[in-house]
Length: 111
Length: 112
Image (cartoon, rainbow over all chains, first blue to last red; front, side, top):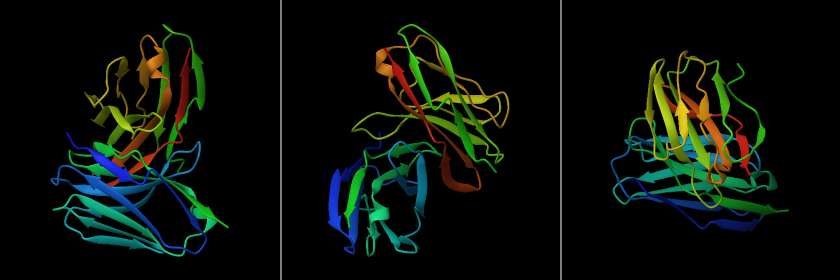
């Protein structure tokens, strides 16, 4: 069974600092890995999806890397802003669209 | 496109009551699924469907039923609600040619 872990559970940084969020998974046989953002009381918004054959994906200030062999992914958010405050979830697809989620990292960016 | 919609947004039930959580998508996605989210835990898959007439169990299916009579709709039925089913429920959909999954806004369910 795929187990997904996100450390730390919570993170507080001053505005402008770069954010580094970690995700680890136990089974390297994956189709893809997806990062989501969740605002309080809201649904999930997809940020980046990395296919198993890719090493990284970038979108604006966001960059996600994938190291399948070591079972790790990292989400980098450059020059953080208060609007980046949210919970970030990592999800691994290792069985045809059935996602295994981490518990998330709650980020607070202080103005 | 409205995307993935869920109703109701909030619901309070008494133990033993039954209800149906509605999920609909207007993107013609084949794949739909239900997850529950509990504090301190990741989302867990309840049931999923790869197309109309086809459903299967996920990680935590007990106490829930689903059916998929159309591509658009994928309702989740609670047969006899229990306090352990207090949670936030999310519906998601995906197109087979695109791995990204799209999530609805969620239904917050409390069982007393």
